[in-house]
Length: 190
Length: 190
DNA sequence: TAAACATATGTCACATATGTCACATAAGCA
DNA sequence: TGCTTATGTGACATATGTGACATATGTTTA
Image 1 (tube, rainbow over the protein chains, first blue to last red):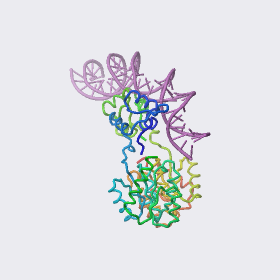
Image 2: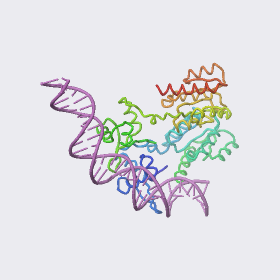
Image 3: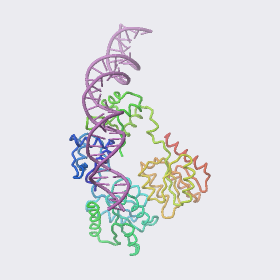
Image 4: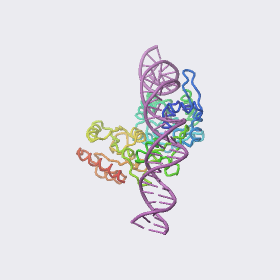
């Protein structure tokens, strides 16, 4: 996801002024590189983590997140298990939310790279979740894969509301993985 | 975000000389880490609070985030506005969630001191929210004030599930404030 | 009780790291 | 493209670490 950091981001992480981070880089404590324009600094995540551990500084949890994390919003246990089985074998770390409340908690808690969303859940409206996701500047960056067995019209509505991709149930396992991985790749390259 | 303090800040909080704080860190009484430059010390807020309580030292008020922040989980706009008006006048900072998803997001995002929860919302089940809240070790510390117009049986069920207090609609404004403040006081003294 | 002692804390000066500010300009975004 | 936000820079102000020493506090001993 975020492979490199700016001085401002590092300054926030370390509870220190931006100016200080630049000095650390200048003096070689922290290894970075400069953008061509005016020479804005960038530091690779790897280098930043090495820097933190080298100086025994606290490492922010959000930096330790694994690469492929997916939030599965699904109330049907059987379906959730099926998705979990398939995606786990493909290297995904699965976080399962059974309703909107758990989904919100999980989202704000840990960074995920992808969300799969069941539109038709008793007790909650998938569309309203989708609406909040796309309108939130933070969350709108996370691609949403809508999984649902509802009709074509609703699927198109979801697409219009900002879903990254749509898969009608029942779906092929290989297709699920292909779509999931392509969504993440698009975001990474973006 | 990791909030950290310098030795000078801690010295002021403790009414002690900066030099002394450095010695505390050196001798292991207080856990800290060093910045790369000359080795300026930083102490995580968490560690500082632990240090204060461990040594039975007075804890500065401003570190306890004694603000009155309440999360109002309520889909009825009119009711939400009514609650907001009353509580804001009493010094509360209100965060309003219209459904479970927004509630989850808001909860993990910002620390609140109190949650008011409407049990009867179309599209979501207040009981399942309550269940997640009480079973989560982090969230179970936040008192929940159930506001609902449903029957006595359901209110008792909510109480049994861990609601801090229950208020049947319609309720008296003064009573709302009294209950809200008492819930927060109990938690603070705990 | 008071002296003697060990230990913790305060003081000082100095070198230097870090923070602040204003301004120009790059980077991000729709 | 045009706008907003973030960043780099220099000069300067402020804060911090360190060592050596003074002072305060608590405890033991005669």
